[in-house]
Image 1 (tube, rainbow, N blue to C red):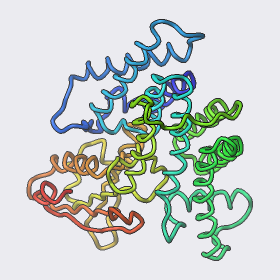
Image 2: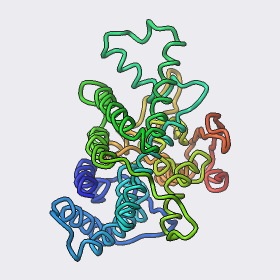
Image 3: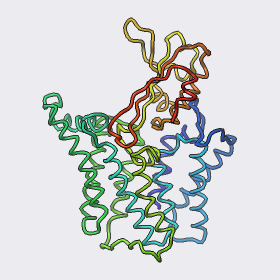
Image 4: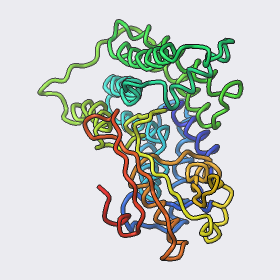
Length: 382
């Protein structure tokens, strides 16, 4: 809990505009038409940070610990309700971690071990596809090859494909090793090697990803030895007479993220990290209409193609610039964000939204469609 609380503080600090609400990027609530005054939103943030400071610096059990953790859990959830963009993977891990702390120590430990193992398993599954050398898997593999003095383009495409499949299968193997007590220590060491490799590829010497990515991987390097070290103790079996809350929580830890593969749970709470599975919505408008867009959005509009007058509005870059956070990769969020951007344009402005989304049962297959009227934006949405 101290580790989770400490890294929650660090990650909120490096993504501060997302939480304090002082950017021009729209805050989109989780529930339609739900809104609270910004002062209430900031009170929840102050409660969360206060409890995290208290927990991170605690030296022993105190009578008020449980009350403080309840307050932290409530505040963390309300911050997500006020703005679903805050359902970052690391924030969801904090929420789940706090929830496991209300169980008996051995049960809470087993739940948290299952939670961490599910991250590797679900993340790997979400990247499984006939063609693996795409997206972040390809970028990481290619970067590691460059760092070892191998030019990726000199390798046959088949070799790069095999390396990406190996990367995904290796992560899946790490998650499975963490599940069984006798292979737990090996899984822990391999998981730490995985995060060390990611830090090398994504850090300042590699692809130079956002500071939050660096801190997220560092968090796992601190958590893994604490959670998975110690003598081997088998997980308490799920028995009929066992308390129902533990049985429900044990199922939730696995069924909820796995349901994300079939479009039920959101992508990031389903641990679809560095995955190409999530939906993508790309907004294009006529170049003549860009002057009506928000001023902070202007730097993130691409130039038109030769002999063309359509430009791409880079909402992902706008999100990073204004909130220091990646765009929440959920269809409903992207749709609402685009609707708010289009609200600045005249009613007769021309636009198109190119949508790429996974099939429900075969998530490695994509469905492509285009919307180009406001009526379609309102109606043609699952």
